[in-house]
Image (cartoon, rainbow, N blue to C red; front, side):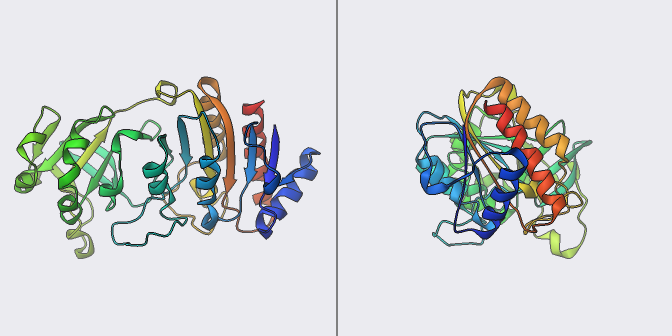
Length: 308
């Protein structure tokens, strides 16, 4: 197994020098990469995460991609950009490559909901219309009960793909607010579709800024453990912003990140136990301070040991 870095990226170069010294190994420039053998790539900042797309295009024989990141990196509903970048590249992956995408640790735009007397972590996604094909997307959210939801404006954009959502095998059920039921075409009706009323959902965000975002459509993904996914050969990409901000600071760190180092290495171990990891990368380095380097080296070693 070999390790590579992007030689024109100062952050990646600094990380490569540090990891090379700590582990007494030679880290090669990315232009020397051999995609036929297992490898780890040391990427730069969070804003270079889209480099992973080009890496995936060059690997044959994989069926799954683990996106360990606080963000989904799918274009937001308010954006119309078609240029591939760090905030939209997973959407391009879904449309260009036949891979199952597994989101691990995603917590941005998190709101707490009490739905039908039960507490949920609510993941607000105004880009749900870009989660396509939705049957290729899985969520791993530890042991929490969670719902992915959107507002009225996003639901209107979803009308053409509601049938796909309702009948996807990875979706447990969907919930639609009664007053918006007319947006559901009759052919999408099934026992997966539940209608709810406003008194059944306690929306903890009471400020005016959130009232227009009231949850009107909720998706309950099937709870599937990492070891139960329909995968064999996989690629793993880690954005360091998945870690708690007090552990490491990145350009896109957020208070919503909940992973500590043990959580992350446990996920890597669980993936390794069940699947063949053919490649991996790490991005998100922001400051070249010693603590960050030490943490990244521990992540690197966990990946390396999982691929030997």
